[in-house]
Image 1 (tube, rainbow, N blue to C red):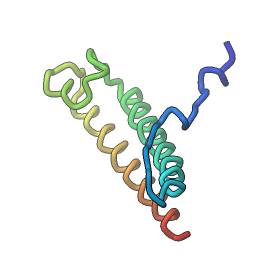
Image 2: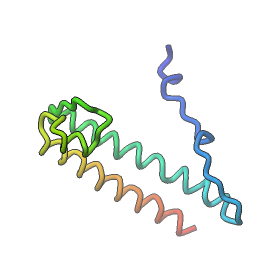
Image 3: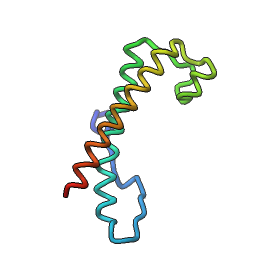
Length: 101
């Protein structure tokens, strides 16, 4: 299986309904929002792996920490915090360039 077939991404999967004059802007915003979120979640995941955090409930997020399903909750929360800050900063930059046009 080719790597490109694993990474295939189609923005048409996301159905953002905009029935007003801003439909084109909404589609542009979609393209500007999703990539920063990919980067931020990748950074958070890479940091948690680098810190050696093991989650017994990988789908649990913050609730896995509360339920003690994470081996190193402090480092897990640090990775989550760093990913959140990076995502917020990237979104601010991405959406700010959208407003300048």
